Length: 223
Image: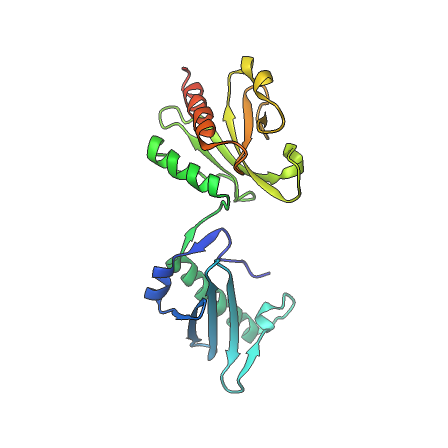
């Protein structure tokens, strides 16, 4: 199957313009030839970041789709697929920025951690690209982890996934803190030392920052 070079990314519309995209209604559109196979690639990027592509054979004015068929084989199909993927990868690298997390709370928290601690999220797991951690610079110990998990696995109501923050906490206080409404036991962490906070607005940013600061101190061996 073809990989998605736009997954976990958001378009920079200024960069799209510089790359050659033009605005057509609510979309940014690029039409570019794939020289070796003599097809025209059309890429459409919506304001919400949705990307749609189409290959057209200009000789007959019809779309070409065999490059999207998993079982399609042959030298020509392989050449088309290779040029198509390479073109999209260039657009992704030149015009899109990494945006793994969707929650506005998560995005704001990442910005505040950057400003206060000078730390960026580290994406350690290739199989779990929508999980990240923060660690102290002095001893490399983790003080926070932003994880994307199924809501039901954490104990949250509703369906789908949720973004949560795992932080360290005083083991003597965890039983008092955990209410299974706004504060849960750490997800995939030692539940005697970590708690989890939903990043969906149910916990205010001030509380989140206080818990994260406490975790930063605990990770440093002092409170």
